[in-house]
Length: 117
Image (cartoon, rainbow, N blue to C red):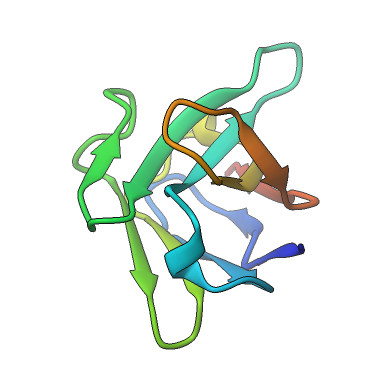
């Protein structure tokens, strides 16, 4: 199983980026898909997730600015990031949770997002 992220890069504060995650396994075989991030010197944190029924959850730190979505026909998951702050600088990871209550058991390689003027 492979999860491949793309779309990271450098942007100025206030800018936008859209991350994509391509899945090698049907999106319907996952309980949930999520985006996590890890900033230098900090623990990895859950940013947003989308459950198999389409319900989404977003961390308070990015609520109103980040949106997770999916394309079920293409087996892809997206993270639209608007109004980016320097604190959003991190490596962003796509992750898949196969079973309800289980761990995120598959991870992508990560994509760097840098917000700087």
